[in-house]
Length: 338
Image 1 (cartoon, rainbow, N blue to C red):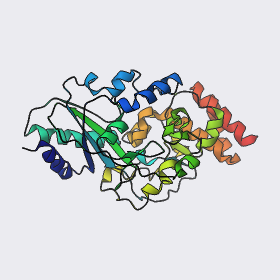
Image 2: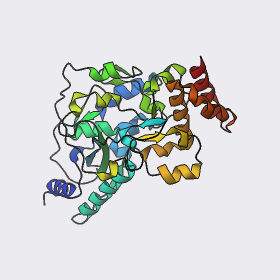
Image 3: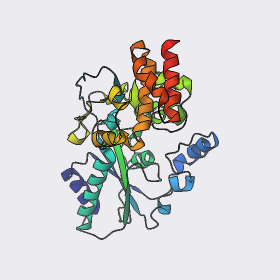
Image 4: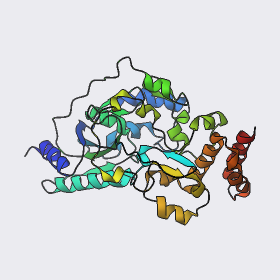
């Protein structure tokens, strides 16, 4: 049996958009980058700190022979306005059901299909694994690095959720690398609100708005100003990318923002309980950081709106039980009134 072709065929049946295969050799191409990142104190609290674990698949699965990389597109044109007076923007990655859940279910189903024809050892991950998933996707032929450091696929663009399965399967015919097609374009670099894209293919994660909306670290004031009305994530560098124009749209209803329409009601966000937050937003990807982080981001949004009518919402929060919330409220009030 041609196990590779079998897996490809089953992936199509399971509505998996992209699939690729690569070996389990260490990811040497990113080692120097990771070392320099560590020296420059640019590691984030979300990533594996051991660089060897980040590049060597066999430290996670010693029997590893082949890696299956998969991708699901979340590129869609959903565009329904909401009637919130104060609307905070959610990135497309958090529009629908948490992609970790959706992608893991697809991968689990694929694993079950493979088990029907052969026994094998495996481990699978979506975001939470130690390895650099974008490098695996590149090696697997899913796409190429854009200058914004996203993986770009010719058919689906860069709005792609990535996952990988480490296996001990004997797959010797690996996918080919995809040629980079960014050329002289640098629109993403020019458009980044915070200048986080410091050079082509080099991002400072600690200046990236997507990171800022998730971190529990203090957000520098000068970067709060650049966050605009974004409550979770940032799509700017992808939205301006020409490679995301005229791409195939998704067939995954799970990623449509049926609940939020792509926005959060900031007035509601600042007043609901943790229980209410979990009931309404618990299935969206952005909920993983908890209500208080998104509440903080909503307060930053109000500060950036500079509307004095919002002071009546903010001032009562100066007595919030969270010192973090009180700090950001004071900043927002000062920004509105200065």
